[in-house]
Length: 267
Image 1 (cartoon, rainbow, N blue to C red):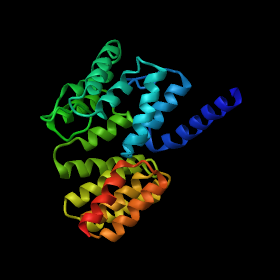
Image 2: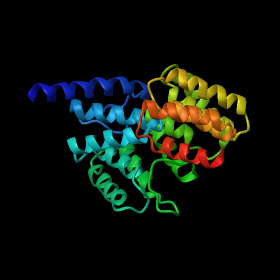
Image 3: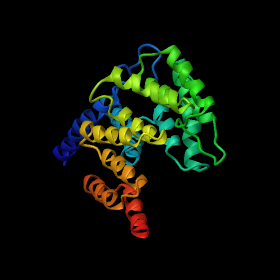
């Protein structure tokens, strides 16, 4: 049994290290004014890094599990509580509980850590608290965080994508994509694919999603994004093909299962 447990822990660490490459979190430690994600415990910190990688790539099912594990390893992990609140249902007890714990355990952290928690203070009309959003309020907080610590990769990413103006958002993400380089910019390329489509440039959108597939072949969201592109284009046969590939890669994708059911009603 002891050897079996060691094998499981070792496997988790290897998986987390591989997945964390997509995060570009090279400056996410305790020095400077970075968000204080880590606590020095190797297993907790690998859970955090892996969770961030999945979250940036919109693989929320996996991200949730890793953040949940980080909280179990360290109940004072305020940043993990922020992310658990972000991924909880609006107005739910779980959302509010993680929000309160994030505030409690960030009290003695640095200013950017407190600003990170303050994103949860902004509650949407439907009761959602979270770090997502392209609003003036949230963008203002990310801008302050960026001014205080421009080297933080997570801060760079969300400062770029939170701008309420689509054209500015695209420009910011393109600049950041160039700065990070391949393959670290995979998550940025994914967001650019959606923004290009939103801006009416379908060809550039498709190229971005194809590039994302190339840069993030081990993930399932790269397949999901390609499927969504074909859904937008009403090419349901191609969409169905990619959604099936998503489930082959990760059988528990809620969005892929829902989309396949929807396709059957549309064809």
